[in-house]
Amino acid sequence: MNLSHSILSLASIAGCAVHAQNLVPNPSFEDTARCHMYDPIRTSAPPWFNPNTATPDIYDNNLDRQCGVPWDPNNPDVQASGWQYAHTGTRFTGAYHWDGPGPENSDVKEYVMVPLIQLLQAGQAYEASLYYSRADGFYYAIDRISMYFSADSIHVDHPWSIPVQPQVDLFDPGHPYLDESQAWIQLADTFVAAGTERYLLIGSFLDSAHVNAQQVSGQMHYAYYYYDDVSVRPVEIAEGTHSFQVIGMTGSSIIYRWVANEPLEWICVVDQLGRTIMSEHVSRDGIGTVRWPTGIVPGTYTLIAANRNTRKAVRIVREQ
Image: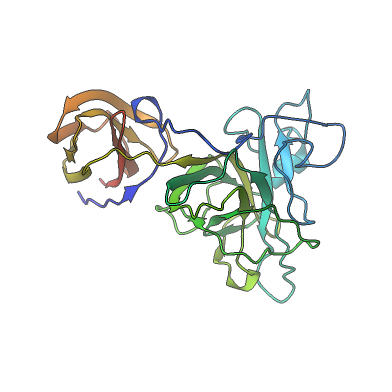
């Protein structure tokens, strides 16, 4: 039994949930507007908008409403692109991230941008996250999706890369490339605001020659990704010193240590798809033990410990 772990900021549910306000309006692209007009972002998922002249899309699994691109699993073209159901509700967005290697590469990039609900506070830590799924009809997977926070909106009169330095690069700690195409995976990281950030821009900001990618599956060129449930939340940290660490594992249990000014209240185990597979209420400090759920398979999991003021997460690997 090997043990590997790293401190993470991950969202979960029940007693381990993050309760701070999400500063992203229309985070799952459910709010609609003038659906009879073709303006894929601005009129079908306001206040999201398109900052360059490329054409990201809003997809709609609600085939009666059809606000955005109707995402019908019975349509052969939809299946060829990579059909997916929304993570939340019935709508999500999608964007090209890379045109592939070689001199024929056009460096076309698609982005989505949104004004945040409020200006970020200087010195405050924020957790930025989204759920992604790779469109499996396109055969490249890249290693990151990035977020750039700006003081003002952006519009450039071309369809190519926007040359800014993102504050957040979202990676999957368990995989070198973002290659998941059957499920929605949450990517999350934290950053400290300068106090000038009012807009969020999502996409790929590397020039195409420096994109890290590999071919995985599919028949069409490009790396193309779907997004849903975008979030920017202030990280709430209680006063005092807090510590949470895994100090051992057996075939049946996980041994952890919690040190804080307030007792631990919840302990959860979350799988790599973000599903809570075990959650229990506890009331203790110091060293504790939690049993692996019955029938658990080898893989990477997250152990989350929380009380009403503090949340800590540790990634662990269960082997045979």
